Length: 252
Ligand SMILES: Nc1ncnc2c1ncn2[C@@H]1O[C@H](COP(=O)(O)OP(=O)(O)OP(=O)(O)O)[C@@H](O)[C@H]1O
Image (cartoon, rainbow, N blue to C red; front, side, top):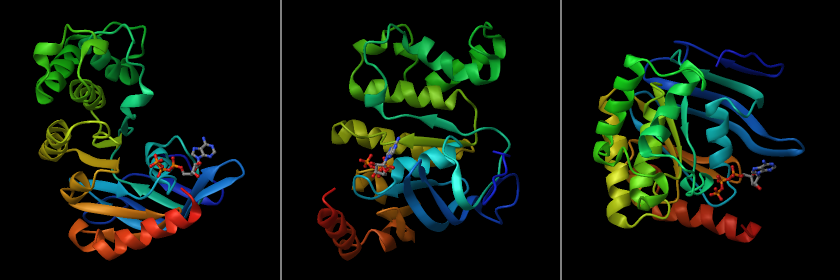
């Protein structure tokens, strides 16, 4: 992300300071006529899993969009280490179940950013796809249609597609939503394992168990930061009650 904006700055690389992969300073962002994120100042640690937590409409997906570089900050500063564009894994519900794609074809799409959709994959691309399938434990599903898979299997295919982009920053929107606790726990464990491969992981979640197993979290309340840091310190019963009480009051 190297674009410079009038009132905001998005810059890379190596300017975040020690230990941070992304540094937000006074960051504001939203949609035309709809400000959402207000004055966020926080670090997202490198080589860790960070959970974005907050009620519906608190701005988690908007923040993911900013981190992905698809939503421009209106003011403030975003600094990010790393040269490669972030990889974004959308909400499972946003991806049509009936897409006539095999798991391998879906994961191969992760190479399009580098190769272009109309150029065939080379040997290196195919090795990267094989490795992403293996990492997510779905090599044996490679020939199956996406639409035939369970929710947890399909989610793993989407994460493998993100991994095939070979970014050092993986962003995921609610990767465990709609999964049973076992499948959700498996996804959470996989995210933790990816850190050992050199990936910084940020995911938006309503799953408190997943959030608590992250190394860091950002708790959002109506587009502002209600807390950030270690989940055991931030996601206290009183903080959660307060944030959700505000959301209830606002009718979200
Ligand atoms: N494309 C858009 N245009 C205008 N406003 C939007 C758009 N997308 C989201 N919003 C608004 O921005 C605010 C934050 O939405 P966002 O999706 O970031 O919240 P969230 O915390 O991810 O919510 P959820 O948990 O429901 O997914 C909401 O008030 C929402 O209505």
